[in-house]
Amino acid sequence: MIKINGGYLESGGQIARTALALSTITQKPFEIFDIRKGRKDPGLKNQHLYCVKALKELCNAAAEGDGLGSLSLKYYPKKLVAKNLSIDIETAGSVTLLMQALMMPAMFVSKPITISVIGGTDTKFSQPFDYFSNILLPQLQRFAKIEAKLLRRGYYPKGSGKIEIKISPKFKLNDFSSFEEFHSHIKQNVNPYGLAGQHILIKIKGVSHASRNLENARVAERQAHSAQAILGKKFNVPVKIISEYQDTLSTGSGITLWAVFSKKEDDIDENNPIRLGADALGEQGKKAEIVGEEAARNLITEIESKAPVDRHLADQILPFMALAGNSSIKVSEITDHCKTNIYTIRQFFGDVFEVDEENKTISIV
Image (cartoon, rainbow, N blue to C red):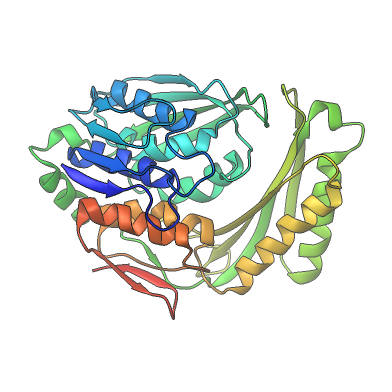
C-alpha cells in the first residue's frame, strides 16, 4: 500500500483528490495520513467525502477512515464500472474540486457516461466553472471527448449550482490486462503536452456573471466593462466578455477571463491549445468595477509571464502529463500547490518529473 503524507508542503485537499484519482486508475491502494494538517480545520471536509463516495460507485472501491474531520484515509480501488453519477454535495462545496478526483477515472471507463454535480460553481479557493470548462477541459480532450454544461450557478453559502458533464472515452482501461499495458498504449497514441511558448495572442474572451437580484445594479455588465477597458488598452486583439444573470439561492458574482494564443494567426492548434486564465469573485462591499479590474490585472500578469500555462492550470494537468509521457510545459509560476501535486503523483508513477525552477519548466523524463 502506498503511504502518502497529507501534510506535505501546501498540505491541502489536493493531495487527497489527486491520490484518489491516480489510485483508481493505477489500481494501487493508498493510505494518506495527516490530511490537511496545516489548515485551521484539518481533516477531511464534506467535498472530500463526496469524492470517495462517488468513486465507490465508479469502481466499487472500499475505504477506511472516510468520515468528516478524519486525519487519515485508506482507499482500495477495484475495477472501473461505467455508470452515470449524480452527486449533491449539499453545501457550496466546489463542484470543480470534486471533479479533480473524478475526471481522470471517468475518462477511461468502457462507455460514455454523464456526471451531474450539485454544489458551488463559483467559490473561493477553487477554479470557477468557466475556468474548468474553457481552460482545463481543452487540455484533456486528447484523452476523451468531454462536454460540460452549466445548468445553474451556485454561490456561497447555499451553493445549489448544477453542472453536467458528458464523457465519451477514447481509451478504455478495462480493455487492457494491466495498468502498465494501458499506460504504454496511451503514451503511444496520445499527443504529448508540448507547451513551451505563447506564440501569437489571437483574442481574449470571458464570462461575467451575477445573481438575478443584482441585475438592476448592472453588476455583471460593470465587471465586464471594467475588465474590457483595461484589456482593450493593453492588447490590440478582440476582447469579448459576455454578461449573464441567473436565479441563485445566494447572492454572488464573478468574472472569468481567458487569453487564446496560436502558433499561426487564426490557426488554433487543437492538439496543444494555449489558453491562459484568470478570474475574480465579487463579495459584499466590493465594487463590481474592482472585481473586473482584479481579473484583468491577473490575466495581464499571466500574459506578461510569456508562459503558455498559467499558475492554476499547471498543477491540474500534471497527472495527465504523467499519463501522456514525453511532455514538457513552461509555466508562469511553479507554486507550492504545483510542487505538492508533483509529490503526490510521484508516489504512483515514480520520479518521472524534471523540474527546472529557474526556467519554470516541468518535463516528463
